[in-house]
Length: 229
Image (tube, rainbow, N blue to C red; front, top):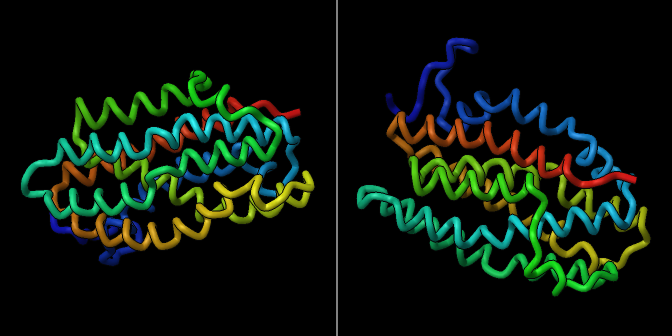
């Protein structure tokens, strides 16, 4: 199948990125109804809940670069263009987990107790699933996870950071991770869109779609594991 396909519902030709958005819409809309997301976006959470969110964010964000490296190492020679894109992602994402530890420190937490701690089971399962898809399945599937995490940041992160800061009377240095990712990921998503529209293989496309649908479910579980007062 070519990179563009006929959408029988709308009867028009669309790109693979548009197809990806369409075939993950139901999972995305269900994810966006998660109570922790909704309350966080309007600043209706306690400091304890915000700290709990940061801890789980740390435990998955610290795997971003290792996952990118694992994906790049498994790509075949004909996808060298995608491996080159992964190098750019690594340069952009390297060290972001330290921003989260800095946010925790500003919120009164000892970051070192979390650096080597264990995540919630839901976070552990999400990360493990990503590694498994790369190592056991099609490594291109990883980009389904990229869609979910970066798309969520664009929709919610900057707005949530402002709402949480105002509600909890926090300094800007307590929300560096959230504040930065809302704006950073807009550019990332444009880059991501161009990459997805270069995919030719139907197997690659199906892998990305499946991963994205699974990640909306698993990432939603991560948020649902965060206690609300």
